[in-house]
Length: 395
View 1 (spheres, rainbow, N blue to C red):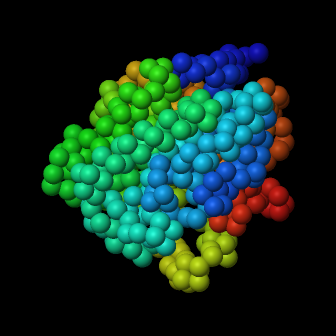
View 2 (cartoon, rainbow, N blue to C red):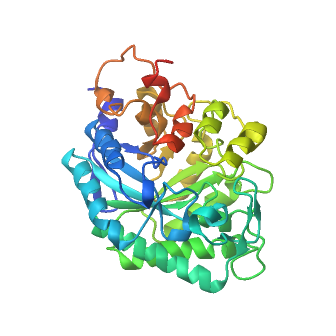
């Protein structure tokens, strides 16, 4: 076995969790939580990923509270779904993999029709995607959400998850506090980076106080938001250090803002026609049909497109940094590990082929890799994510 492959398939740790190799399934919203809970389809999706040799699979997206959802088919954490979550973690464990769950809150882009109340965010702001105007969170709101994060983490551990991933990127609530584009507050939670970081840091430190010292707390964060006035890499490096100080076990430096630059984090084709077709509401269909290319911009795909910024963050901290962004083949994984990253997180390539990891030890095959058509993104609103190109023979 060559040295590159030896590292790829070797054990490594995040906190007190030892993983069997360096490949982790990224938290990609599955669209399989109809009713806000666990479905058999969600369990099978992650069981299949685990059976393909991936060291840990990440369940996404689980809101910390009812008011943090953008879709009816998004999960939200409460005691009544813990038994079903345990069924999910047991299915993953039976295949020899570890299980993580992504915890977060949509903030200002929560759907008022789903949560049956007015969304809230770092500051008052209009959301074009949901056609809603959120209210600015009070200090009581902030404290309540800190407690919600802590309770959700405890329930995740109770359900058998080996790690949790706190979503502080992609324009979700914690990211909205970090970004100058959404945070215009004039109190202790706005203005300077230290103030903007106060709420996210308190979330991590609170969870760390509740969990065992070595329990893995991963944080997904942004290197950059992808638009003028948003977060940039210079501040992201400082944020990474602050997350480490607050008690994070590992960092996942991603990018993009769901409500402004949604495919900046993915790159590749924008499947507007499929997105329009799969919308349930007539006004969503019309809006996407008329303004789809403006709402969901297209960014050219490049392999390892986040490498430069991720290296800056890796060099600034001592905890493990997971590389994410533009990994399609074994050579991409090897290159990221050669650059000193401890693990890689992979999304679309594992949706395309759940046995991607298992094939790492084999000779290169002629099978075509993910083509970044992003039809899987549109499929989430039509019953659940899957590789449309592979199953419909487009590849």
